Length: 109
Image (cartoon, rainbow, N blue to C red; front, side, top):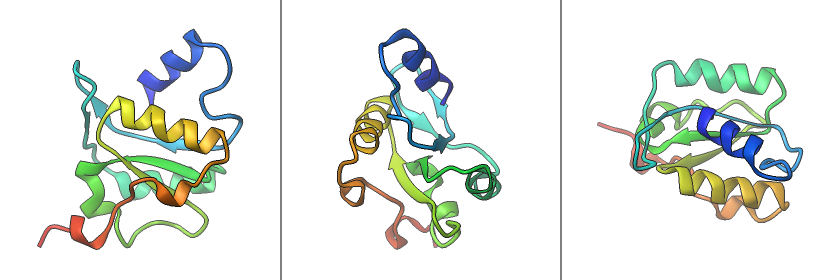
């Protein structure tokens, strides 16, 4: 989210189009989004703070699936580019249901 915040500051307009978007993850030099700890708590904290959307690292999907609070839409992201693309869909009021999300197939056995 820090990288997205920098991009948002350096470019005209709001990346989120005024929508309430939260998220988390690490980022590498090549733009790969990586996992973090405590994502379940972050999901609930984000929703409690008014977020409607949450950008989650794909590598955390095993912890996300089945633990999404009501009213929060989780978008799976594996790269900075995917995050920016998702924000454009969200900001433009596009078909958010077409964006990738965490599924049962992501749950590690």
